[in-house]
Image 1 (cartoon, one colour):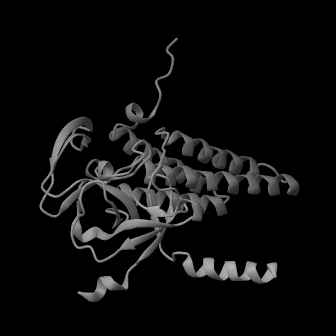
Image 2: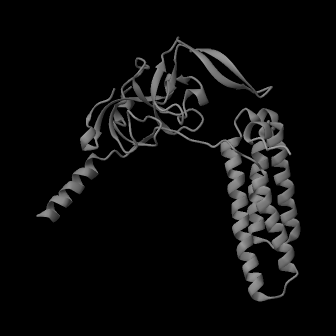
Image 3: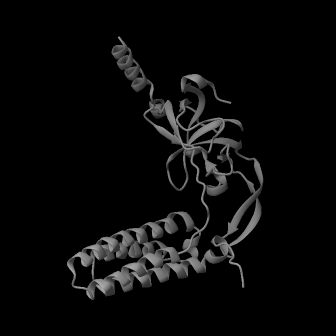
Length: 151
Length: 134
């Protein structure tokens, strides 16, 4: 009996449930953004590739590759957050190549994930520096960071 | 003309910007035949500007109205300035009930009536909260 009522209940719920979702769209951003976060992870990739090249030990090399892939993924994440959450449509006026820059930088992060070529990691650092310049040009340091205590 | 009869007639709600009136997970009946912005205080489903997602918000000010004290960033100087917005003949100003977290007209500006999808009027689930929306 309970099996039947359960099934009946589930069938009714399935019929009644709306198939369309409307979002009471919200976000609660902390408002803190800094390309330095992406750069530190990209620097990790750079250093790991250096250490990988200097070490013949198979176990060490395997670990190095795994950690580099993890860090490169974090680079992509931090770049994505800057792209969708910090940058606004009006910033394209100040930085006309904004979207292309992010596309190139995130693609380069993917490349570094798979590569052991130091030049690839260097190019990623350069692209992140370009992102940092865009962040500065749009007032990022003043708008998004909490002022540090001065000694 | 009859295109709007195809609905949607029901929506489920995700996210929390309409709390406490509407909770995430609520099931609502909506009227997709509306062609004009309903009166202020009404809850509407729209195709959100910029993202095109289906969103639910409350009408704050109707077409032709004036919305004072809007904070915007001046694109040329990046300065925060306060402006008064005068709505066009097809435009409404929409705001979420929980302004601290809501993405609404304060982010994307006035919303044109061609983005109006439906008016939400009744909650039919969950069971304990069935009733007319207010």
